[in-house]
Length: 250
Image (tube, rainbow, N blue to C red; front, side, top):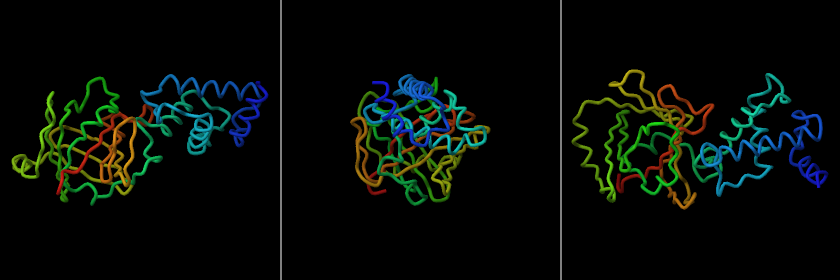
């Protein structure tokens, strides 16, 4: 049985001779990848139905090592390297690279938005204290970089909101700014909180799809948090996930 497994592994890991020098080493590497995958499944490592094949794990590790380990050699793969490869290839709640989405551009964001309540079922939050605890949230991106928002927590259905509801908060002093980079990274800053920063990898859905029972419709805005203040996802995983839908007619 071991020879059959190693034969299959050899096919999957065709370019992995740099990682290991013996059959036992190969089996140990497989065990380590599987252990990391199980340990963080559903927390910082996610995939549809929780399924990840050996080929998936191998591809994730190969992509990571090509980009990050050339300076010290691929034969020195640590458990941390394995973890980092998997949070990049299998971010929670899903990998946008494997979904029908595109990176957002300025024209996609301008307008009024509301949080999709159903998305709270796959909410990702790696903070001890939730920075966005409201189950009803609405915000507006203006072309001049001004951002306005209001939230509420309720046990009832979130109320419908129209553009006119933003007029009252528009009269308040401007404190939140937004800017979208060419790489689709949304940066949010505040003038009332020193050194405040949020960075989100912003995507727009191009075709309908579903994940874990949650529907995503064309035009929906998907935000994968990359940084909040000094906390970054680089060595942790996606810090927070949010799904917004444009308010009709806006």
